[in-house]
Length: 335
Image (tube, rainbow, N blue to C red):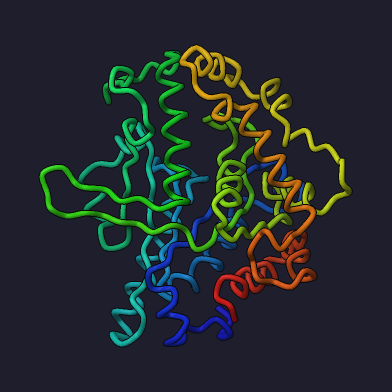
């Protein structure tokens, strides 16, 4: 990595207790149309995460633990493991403590994480299991862990609500008391959120995860770095913020998603039947995002990146990986 971002004592101290969130998923049609494959996205994630970890920051990513080409969880774990081994071989005991992966895992995804898997990665990863109860689901509506009928409306509803709770807690921070143990786990609120790629179809929940996490960052004042030059939901967000006022992007409208995403209408019907607040349903979530983007469009400084406006615009539009990394790290590390 460029030596510009080599850890200093001051910056390492500042980042030692901080967490930087990554919103990333592979939208193949968008990326491939730009000459980018999945491996390009993996490499970009590595180039962004490595300097942050070296400065002592942890990185948060809510991916699952199922093996697959588009799973970035293991990419981050392999990166952290390799960096730890390198530190050990180099004998650099006086340097900053390498950050970890904070993996927020929502029910029922965390049921796939075996004790053996967790033990294998214990030095690289801290797993936060977000339960149905943490999503404020009434005890009478909490489903047993063995529920696996994906056509069951209550299962889909509980899963979607828990996914949203996971994204909210990753943004705002969470404290967990382990049953039967005196130990309390605390993960602080995010220092920054980096948005890269992002699915706009075939997702779970009331809205695409990258869009929901971006909305939560804006709601809670978390600096938001949108790398729009690599396709996906991040590109749609960037175009919405930089385009002429009044420009309509179908992918940012609830109507488009309700009409095109399989299972989204039944999910919202289940939510209405359960009398969820309108703000928690797809219409309400996209309405909130629309208001947030409108406010940011009038003042890009609301993104909180600390980048001058010309560099912020470049960050949101460049398809040059090296430049995207430089600008993102400049904003987060303040150098």
